Length: 163
Image 1 (cartoon, rainbow, N blue to C red):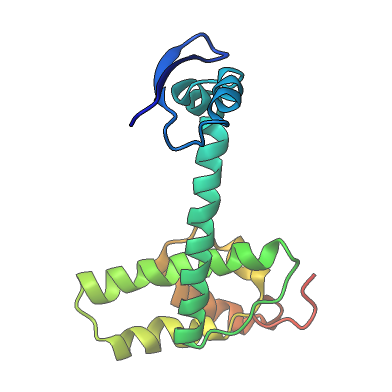
Image 2: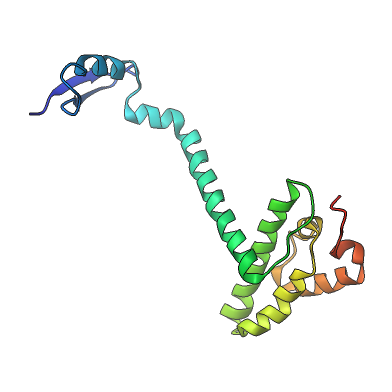
């Protein structure tokens, strides 16, 4: 048997709520507790920024898992830099290599091996997070040339001191 009760929430909205899933002795106190809360719509409106931020954090976690899987698959080296630089640079490197893959392999029809030779192998030589951050605005197709230039200047390419 359903136990419907009209609840007037703290926000002023009224809803009929089914309290039959609560033990009979708990229904009155649960209804009173509900009356001190906002209704579902008002709660969502008041908290949607936090709820959206939470889903953004979940998206970032998923993206980071994808980036780490790509690092393993492509056998890319760890980057050197500060605690803030390294995750940012990993994301930049991932996005640049993905954009280069889409352009070279999916659009132009290059082979996987050609992509590996032209983009991934040179990218393995750049271990400085700072380098990837400094070149974040560059077109992905320019990455091989930029890496070639960086290899001419060893300070930009491989750095034991991440600062």
